[in-house]
Length: 297
Ligand code: ADP
Ligand code: ZN
Image 1 (cartoon, protein in one colour):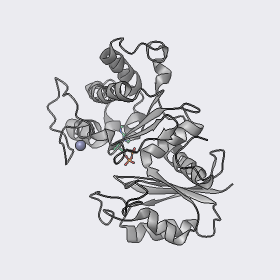
Image 2 (tube, helix red, strand yellow; image 1 turned 30 degrees about the horizontal axis):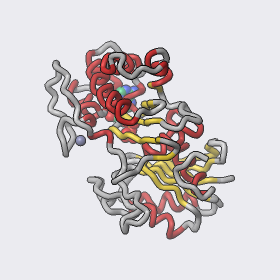
Image 3 (cartoon, protein in one colour; image 1 turned 180 degrees about the horizontal axis):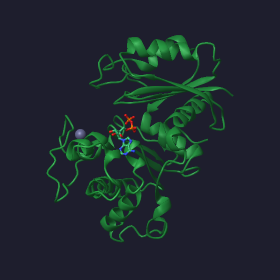
């Protein structure tokens, strides 16, 4: 099978072709400019590629409600040209194949369930910590949508006692994303994240914020696995700091071996590495080709 995959990000669009085993056969990326510039490149790439279906994992917020007039659109983004842009519609007009459509982070969660660190599990939570913070949720064998879709980057967090950074979220100031996404680290310390040494105080503060929302996710959703990806998580010293902070927060209350004995496997890096998003889009496409969206067959 040849399935198309699109990871539509705020910085770049990654397009590729993969097969039913999660193997990416080829890929290319285009910068996310105005849709009038980017979309013709995406469309041209897939022309003549003879794919049976295409999966799209998109930056958001997006409309995922099948009955809605805005289904397939990116909704309220500040990115020029993309607010209310019908991304799915533009693709459907050109390619008469089944489409999978979900958030980039839901796609990544699904890819991890099919072929990565959460393989075969009935639930997992995927969090990306990059330019923004996004959360995808797979639960009871399907991707969680609901009223809109999870927006776990914008949850309120308790301030670290030694942190006086105001936060950079345009909506909330000091929400999780405002305090812990890549740009917050840079603004707080006046240096890019990768310029700060591994033992810098920045990482303890970073882990303090991320661990709060992970603790809440564990208590609210009870996922079988928590997967943390994105550029900031390349600071691998964060994983043990986060695990310790989550254990402190839970304080023995969630009494399961996964948390008390196997925390290293419970909170983990993506099994698919940097390919989680694209493989997730591939998984969505494969699911659409088989006529079932977002379910683990
Ligand atoms: P995006 O979120 O734009 O799709 P990334 O996941 O790569 O892309 O996130 C980019 C953010 O991650 C930037 O703020 C960047 O400074 C930060 N970042 C990238 N690499 C590292 C690193 N090795 N250490 C710390 N921060 C990093
Ligand atoms: Zn916010």
